[in-house]
Length: 511
Image (cartoon, rainbow, N blue to C red):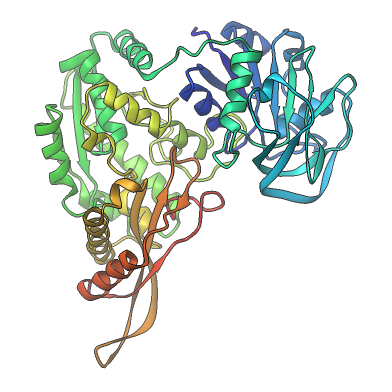
């Protein structure tokens, strides 16, 4: 069992994965385990410190989440974040109660005492709050390290025991010195060394794949996106000809997507590719389906059926490899106590029984880490920095039923959006950009005639890891050009709108 620097116990926060992500990007190896993990399993990891994540529950509620109290007797530094803070207060006999009002968003904290946790950081900081409960009294032998306008116990600690508690979330980008706080905890309090990187991760995964696969073969599902391309490159490095790389055209791709993927694998990556056309099968199963969760599950199940059928054509295939990421797992609520946001087709959308065993070498890392890994494996920047494209494809960018007419409208609009972003230089400045067909009609005037046609929504966001995102502030002139071209060139569209919501509370994709 691999030893860890910092072990994160997940109490259900949508930000839990970010805690590990922030630590790892600074060279500290962190892993996540469910809040109710056995104490023996924690000891087996030999962590240098423990972090208790946030979560949606209340410590005084009947359904509260509690970890083994024995963690406080391990002699390890512990950092409680949000719910983790309230849990520590509860365990040590302090009062936790509903706040006078929910606090969500940016707040300013004021440091009251020097501490290793805030080493070399300013006395005033902007942080990100997300809570409806608050600590109303201080545990015995603890002292206040920082306050905010709404909380006199915003940060408290028992520095003799190396126990620290934060009301805010240092892991999100909105906390301006959050990364430094987590680094200080790992480096100065837990005495960890920053030695973990994507080079070491690649070597570990290649070794792990070889040991698990043995002499068997692996069917690798690819979409042309960076995640599955990196998995294919990992397999090529680990087991070479034992990897069978398969691309499935599900009929839900962007214009020219299949041709681009086939060209990329053959000419850019130099990897042999089997290309299958299953578009009629996918579209037939999606006919009449309106619910987005049902769409995802149908697509996930159908993908597996197609891959399993292809596997039968090759002797010795026992594994299916796919590019599942940490974000897919947390949003599909597979680990810990997190609430389901949406079922990713390759996680929550998978059938219960499968004939192939899954290999998911990227399931513990984030998108930007995947890109670093891709560069480490020798992939081109063109492949590595391509915008994300979801496995369910355009099906989750059409509100309501998916059909050929809607797909054609969406493809044509999406092509125009991407053309304009590339020609203006904005494609490389943004994280993800796409169109959504709303299936909402409105009155318009085209020429001298009345029109009653569909609406396209533009969604362009900035992000670093996909867990949080903000809408891109595109120039008005660029938005005007995109709108003009879509309305003039795509018959059936007479209105274009721009999505200016951030994640959270919205998600990046609409479904």
